[in-house]
Length: 208
Image (cartoon, rainbow, N blue to C red; front, side, top):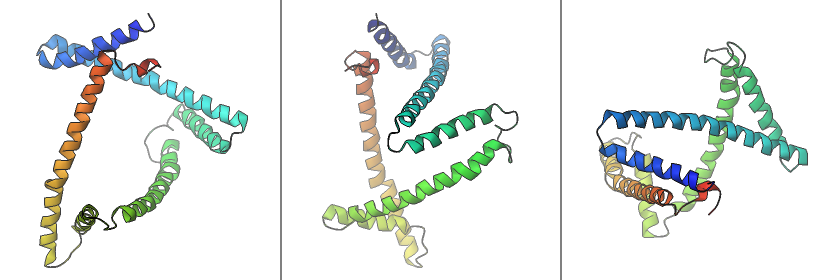
């Protein structure tokens, strides 16, 4: 029963979500909306499970003094502080001056800015290694990147030509690559969904 019940629920739900698109009836539309509501409910329980898992793992690392356990202390402190603020009347609102907005403006935004500042150096380093014109493809990538980066730079008489080249790169080869990518993603998602509904893929039950 522990294996049959989850497989039955997944298969029936997957088949219903597939078939309801081809049946223009109000009853199926209502069932579709009802199913989406259940997805939200399950997501809420999954969030609680994630919070419990993060708390359990962090507490275990702090108890065993695993290297880097200080970061887990900061994580737990931030988690419980935000939870406490959420229960204080008027402090969990988006009004400027509330405790939540102070956390957002003076902690979250500076940390996010620091993270993206560091990320910029990693991107620059990766771009330097990728754009070195050692081969024909690398040269094409380098030239295309320069044209795209200069499309908003005033270049005098060359601005119109560079703008046209940048728009051509974005709307023709770039769009073709994006469409091929999304077609591959769609085919992969379809294949994975069929494998799950047919019982070939069962890793969601905790086993291969």
